[in-house]
Image (cartoon, one colour):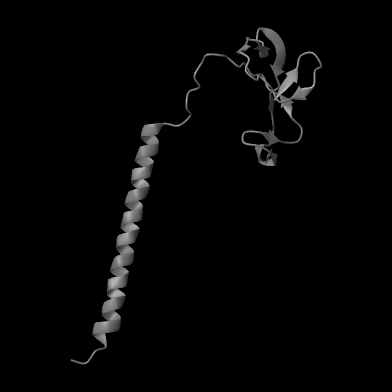
Length: 120
């Protein structure tokens, strides 16, 4: 969402087929003309947010967020791939161990039901 520069209304940012550029003051230029400024907010309680779109949330009592949007930069991921792979391998090993325990219990119950009480 952005604040429409001519009117000051908060609305979706429409670029169409134009070129988009932003400056260090969070202003958005469409085809070289100042059209919008980013409308950013933060919330004290993230649990109160309601999702109303793919990446759009609505909440109560927003506070101004001091945000700088920079064009031409790539956002760094907040996930460490190596640690997540190690965690996945650990979970997989725990699952395999539990699966083996269930197989052992099943075999024990099978022997108890079929072999222990049988007459030979």
